[in-house]
Amino acid sequence: MKQIDLMRELSRKTDTKVLLMVLDGLGGLPVKEFGGKTELEHAKTPNMDRLASEGALGLHDPIAPGVTPGSGPAHFGLFGYDPIEWNMGRGVLETLGIGFELKPGDVAIRTNFCTLDDKGLITDRRAGRIPTPKCSELCEFLDKNIKMEGVKTFIRAVRDYRGAVVLRGKGLAGNVADTDPQVTGKKPLPAKALDAKSRKTARLADEIVAQAHKLLKGKAPANGFLLRGFSEYRKYPSFEEIYNLNAACIAVYPMYKGVSRLVGMTVIPARETFDDEIKTLEKHWKDHDFFFMHYKPTDARGEDGNAQGKVEMIEKFDQKLDRVRKLKPDVLIITGDHSTPTQLKSHSWHPVPFLMCGPAIRADSGKTFGETACAAGSLGRIPATSLMPLALAHAGKLLKFGA
Image (cartoon, rainbow, N blue to C red; front, side, top):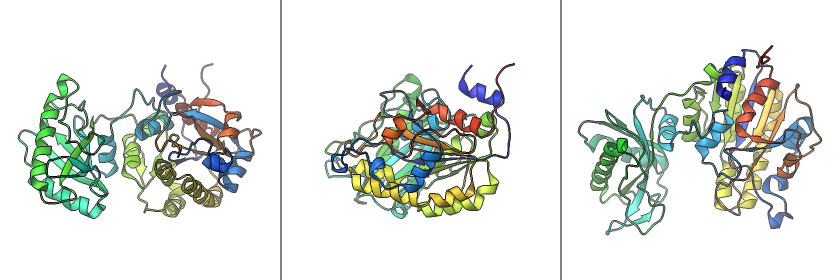
């Protein structure tokens, strides 16, 4: 029996509340300038240290030991969905994240505006990081002017230089390679179908790019169009179906809203800051029995290679936790979706620290929240998919299995 099926069988509705707080890219490696401590261990985190001393610690592997996760599969794991079986491409996640209603069989594609020189070579893969209003203007322009036969095409802005293309029609599939070569100095790649079912999609993608480049000529820096994350939408079993939970997401970035919508969470609008997210949590605390909150700045500083900046973002997160404690969640989990060590400036395969606290949780000997303390924690090193069953059990939401 798969874990999802077991959870369907055992989960029950209760009045208890679970809060999952995810600091994106939380995990790190020892930093020489910090005396061999990681960013999390070096940061001043009195609130998380107090929670660690009251609860239990551990490490989780987002996918499997040694496997570096993308953000999408890492969150599926945290939500209890096998990230290999249930992985979904970035195109669908970004598109759902902006509230676009996809239908089964739609192919969604993440797009980047880019800058091309007069030879058609990419000089900037992000078009100078154009602001969202400019992206919206360009997406509306392309949406009105790109004409395709036999398929409906939707082009929408996501955030900054990123947009989304949706193809709706018969005979489409999403197994197509990106047109982004991931480096400057090269032309955009042709869309390559990776199986026979996706050939039509690849042909349409090439036509969209050709039309976009013609329409965008003279609109530097955003005079090019790259396609990434091709994916075909399919319906997922929801948190309500599996866990008997009325779940909510509080996040700023579209992709994390998209993952949440895909698993049936209610996405509650929040503004740009973590303080706004906390206010949103407080306002809606009575309305849901499960909350997922996402905090992005830790990952951004990790990818910039800014160790001190990552420390500061961890400390800013910690400063708000007194307000969370006052809500008295029955189970509180604080963790990351993956590790983003500043030395690597990218996601990594290293296990991710987590703490879990609540009235029914046995406290272990940990006194601080950090990678070393979590490695010695009583919850051990577990797959990320085990966090949801543990949270539900400690919240009294799982029945006994068997006689």
